[in-house]
Image (cartoon, rainbow, N blue to C red; front, side, top):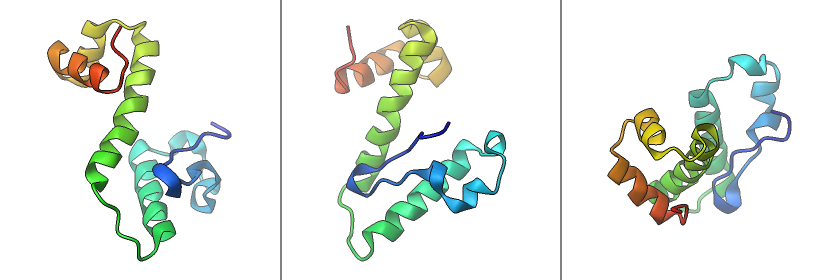
Length: 103
């Protein structure tokens, strides 16, 4: 996990270097914790600036890498990908197309 980072646009932060996480065993760090810490850091870093369309930005920042990981994990088996995500294959194909990942 060394060097791994989760970013949200120009205010992204490397959560693996977060001092709160360094004191813990990285094997016990949950996705929820990493996301929460990253979001907290994001809003600290932007200060008084108000993000626009943040929900859609967040979805894209999460969906794209999720799909990339699943493509590798399932060897691009769309049926398996859809089952893992709990969505229909049609919805999966729509997401893949949205991110330019559809073969």
